[in-house]
Image (cartoon, rainbow, N blue to C red; front, side):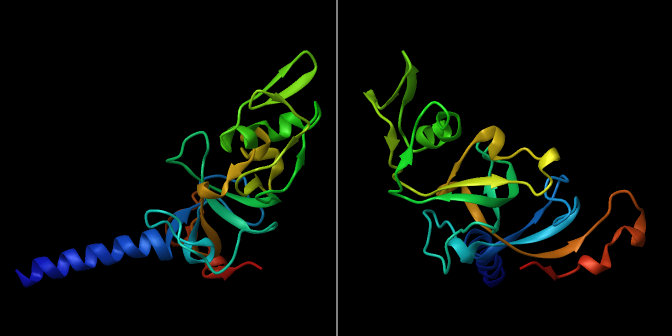
Length: 195
């Protein structure tokens, strides 16, 4: 009986750590090269932006431009993506909407619960002709460092703050899939931190 309680306690502790504190993540592609390499095993710091338990807890910092963040893909929420934040749109920040900017902001408006359409040369947001939109939450534009080989916000648009899992903290270890056995381990990248 004591062993069962101990095992259940350990499992609950592991779940809590994974949901609130952090978890490992593997870089599956070269979209963040040369900063992160395919095969890097990262530590996702969930305390930085606030873990989800089940709603988001307060973190000790906010995602900012230049941070490398891990987030759920808007196309497939089960897929984790690792990208750099290149633009932050704050809650309440007025956005100018015209024919040139509509392509950029359409995903933001839709993910914020709004409806947008273009008719007779005018832009309609939530059924009203408008040239401005004020977001109800923070949004982020995410791009890979290897821009020629990255599926990022240029194809799926802005992501909401709720999609962000955590901040990339450091490389736990790295394995080169092109090499075998002990030669595959990239020793120089073990516990490597980035500014």
